[in-house]
Image: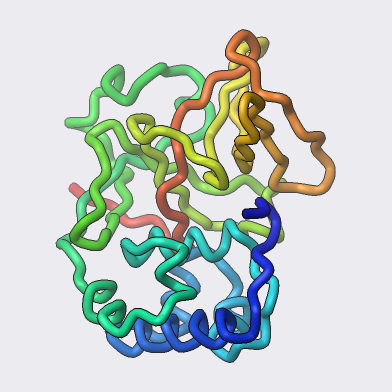
Length: 227
């Protein structure tokens, strides 16, 4: 499966459109609100729903699948039970929102005094999905626009094992700087693709890079404070 796009036949396009439509009909949120939760343009979601997009980005389809706790394959298969399963939610949990400087400075959120932390992001996941107590949130940088609009929140879990197609948070060991990259695994090589057009692809090396965590969810939310 290509990192950049999935080539679908006509039947798979129809099933993707039908499955997404059925899932969203079982939600209490509008298409616009779901697009904001996913951190993708509303028109991107509408084109998927209408069947206009025949070559969607794998990262977009994977993001949608992860959000609803299902697999990418199940989105393009004939699955009549999908809407029921996908609509089940758990109560929100909260992840601390870090600034990028703090995230670069620490090795784990265990180093922080979270008892007095003031910035938290509520996270609602499907029943079969969980995040660890090491998960944290970061807000998008201006350089990530237009793929990620200003105010996009990334939920990052250091405990999750990176997989092909994931967006991962990577630390450059030379200067301890952090960067979000799209991971392509072509054994034995790992390649880290830029989310912007002006950065080069990196060949992952344990001597030069450290995968801090996997982006489990992106949300276009205003920050919320939990006391």
